[in-house]
Each structure stands twice: as structure tokens, then as C-alpha cells.
Length: 20
Image 1: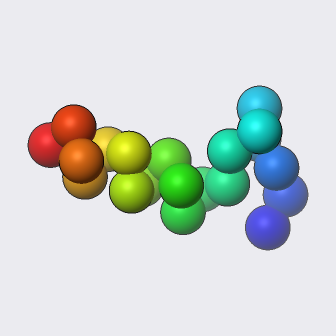
Image 2 (image 1 turned 120 degrees about the vertical axis):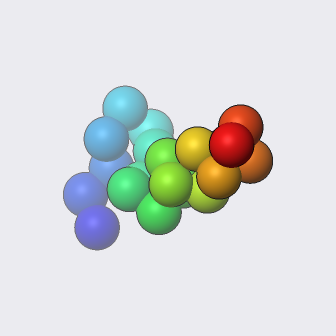
């Protein structure tokens, strides 16, 4: 996947789940 501002879409999803 392309890097978006140093984060991958999967990483963003994981962060959102942690912040849940």
C-alpha cells in the first residue's frame, strides 16, 4: 500500500480501533 503521511491505511485503522 502507498504510504500516506508515513502511515498505511492498516495502521490508521489500528490506531482508530485503539482510540475506539
